[in-house]
Length: 233
Length: 267
Image 1: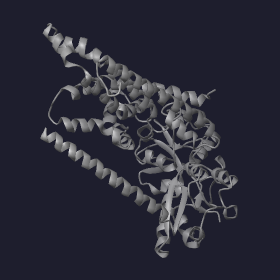
Image 2 (image 1 turned 120 degrees about the vertical axis):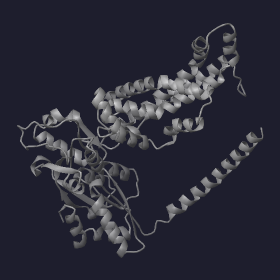
Image 3 (image 1 turned 90 degrees about the vertical axis):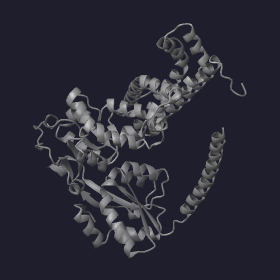
């Protein structure tokens, strides 16, 4: 049903998406929890900074990545020299670009789920003698799980859709950085590429719909589970 | 509490202001889209950016009231846009394939179609590079440099298609193709080589001339690829202003500008 270049784009997208999700997981939990629970110096500024990739044109993070993480960039040269890691023009760069663009979605989902937690549950655990770390691991974290799961779905889906930062930073290389959106873009520019574009577009539509449906169902279930009452239900 | 109420008021005002502003904005853009008298929409291959920008500016000076609106991109991008109804008046492609593509679809005014310019295909490297290239099938291009080779997308963008033909003709394609970064137009490839993110690039001679940060390592002989030709035409919805500008592009004054940028003349 699908041609070789189409499978290539799909599997590369899945690969990049999974890695981006993995990269966002721990920092996302940390930042989301921090924003929901802690007050600290310049918190609004920190939050604004964190969420900037969501509103910036994706070409801006893409260009900044190219000039910092590129082979001529300060960080890029340092990484190459010390760890022999290169980001520019390869799939690792695509992961980095996707992760940066999708990270706010992870933070947002975790933050909301922490805010929904009934703090009396944590207090009860404390009064029963659990250490703060134990409370966090056995009460807070399990209650955050739905949010974390929703965040992961959102990050993965957003990564699949990442275009601007990716093409600016790592280019459009078949089998290396040509993910689903870039493959669609390339197909629409080829003579006779419309059939390929349409097949990939249908896959994108179906995936986006089911990912959002799943995250909606999950958040409904989570709200019920955590005892949040929403109007009309 | 006071603060909260204040904030909420501020929020409501803000939303209202936003709404009014967006209504004005939409009206304004609608007005703008109607005011198109004296506009010539020129869609041209990215490699023509500088020459046509200069020609457009000088034409506007002598023809007040006419605005040349330019859209430069890969010929593939432009052809697909025009096929799907982009309001172009003039189309100039960097290869015959995309020119013929639109000609066959009846979008172009066939009687105006002609080959305007020629160009050459060159292999470039950042100025600091010490690459030495021999145009010989025995030479191993893939082993002669590290990193990637930037050129246009080899399936659709003209410069990439020419580059593939030349690489194939020297037997270099197999070894080098996994390292090719195919960009959406020739200027993007040039920019990657200028930043030394790509250590080698294949662009047109005229692009290489424009940049002080790259040097030409080799000029591909014309026999190694199909001739680099720029066909152009008026589209079927071109008006009088567009026709006049199209004629201007074929005057001796315009020819002198094209020659100065390094193009060869085919008309």
